[in-house]
Image (cartoon, rainbow, N blue to C red; front, side, top):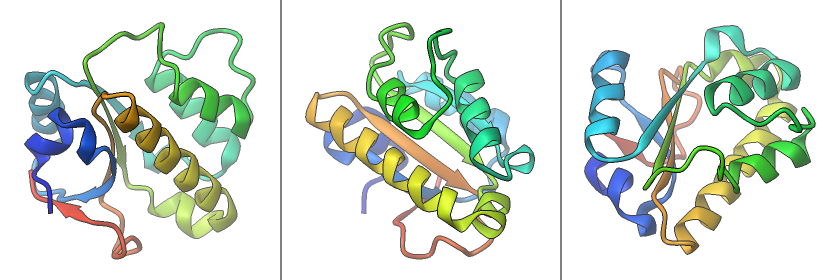
Length: 147
C-alpha cells in the first residue's frame, strides 16, 4: 500500500484513497503543498447531489467559465487543469458520506470520473489523488492512507 508521500509525488500511485481524519484539514492541506502537489478541498457537508458536487469541484479547482456543469464537462476539466498548472494535484473530499447516502447514483458516476482522471494523470506522469476523508465507513473497498 502506498504512503501519502508516494501518492502525492509518484504518478504510478495516482488514484482514490481513504484518508484518516486524525489530522486536521489545515495540516493535511499544508502537507500536500509541502509535497509539491496543489491541494483542493471539497466540503462534503455541502454536497448532496450532482449539482452541488459539480459546483464544489468548479469552485475548488477554479474551473474556467466554459465549464458546462455536467458529467462530461467535469471529466474534461479534471483531466485538463491547464489553467491551474502544478506538478501534482490532490483533491481532498472531506465527508463524502452525504452524497453517497443521498444520491448513490451520482456518487457512482463521480467516483468513476475521479478514478479515470487519476488514471489519465498517472499515465501522463503527473501525481493526482482524490483523498476521501471522513467517509463514514462507506468506502472500505478503497485503499486507505494514514497521514
